[in-house]
Image 1: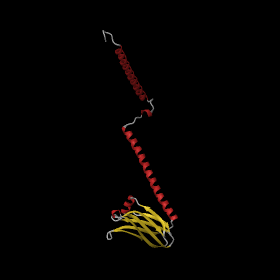
Image 2: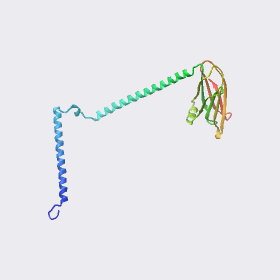
Image 3: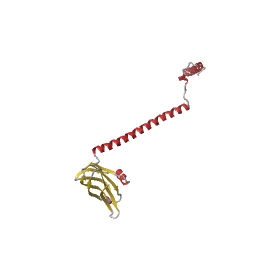
Image 4: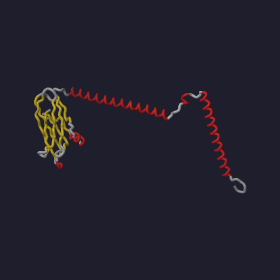
Length: 217
């Protein structure tokens, strides 16, 4: 203000403040009017029931519990379905083996490992009657599983009844990284019914070296 005259910016500011104040008052009145009308309608029963329903902490918790229950039931059904698929696949594999490898001609060859100090198995090659029927390279995880007592189903095939020869060639390394290439051979007689053979690799404390053998079950 200069000599009793209010400057234009001040006037504009007062007008803006007054306008804002008026709008706020009108909004308040409208809100109060709406609440009054809503309350009156509620008392008269004119508001639909759905609009009068509100969520409470208890209702929210119940909804969450129902949703979690539904999820749990669905998860259980999925797990049951997965288990059924696993069982079905197992049954199908058994049926397939029975069809492809009849009991009278079936030959099963497994490999077991009981080594650690004198030999590290890397691979094996298997021959039956001078024909290569299997060749396999082992990973660290597989060697660990074998060292814990597991057995590897190396070969499943068919042979006629009578006398046969099986040969296994083992590749690996010994102490100080020394390479090992050893073999083992066994003559066996195939009779009626399935035949089971086991390739064994074991440390020999007496000889301070690994031993390789094949045995019949």
